[in-house]
Image 1 (tube, rainbow, N blue to C red):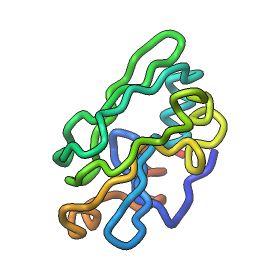
Image 2: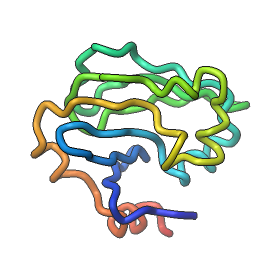
Image 3: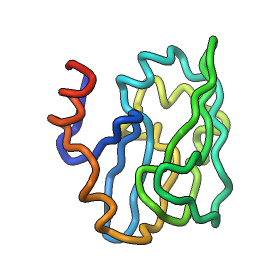
Image 4: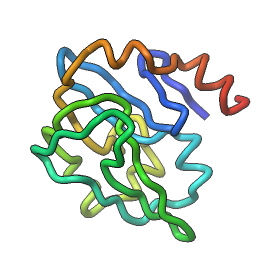
Length: 126
């Protein structure tokens, strides 16, 4: 199981990759394995501002549905168009093509409170 060091993580198993004032967000490989095969992803529409820790969508696995929590406050710029037809990308490439939303950050300082890879691994016992 991988935990890229350049990402930040949440205790709710989301990851965030910051690029300038924008960020990509998805779920961790650990979350994906716990849920099982993801078969559907439902994301809040682009253009909507979402507050930190607010639900911005759901992922549906074969036996369960799980909420997705926004790690930082921001406006959704784009949802991953690949997930409409290929939700399995979350299973096979959660840190790459399996990203879920791209956002414009409201406050860069929000990211300072997120977990490093090492801190996240300690929480999940990896």
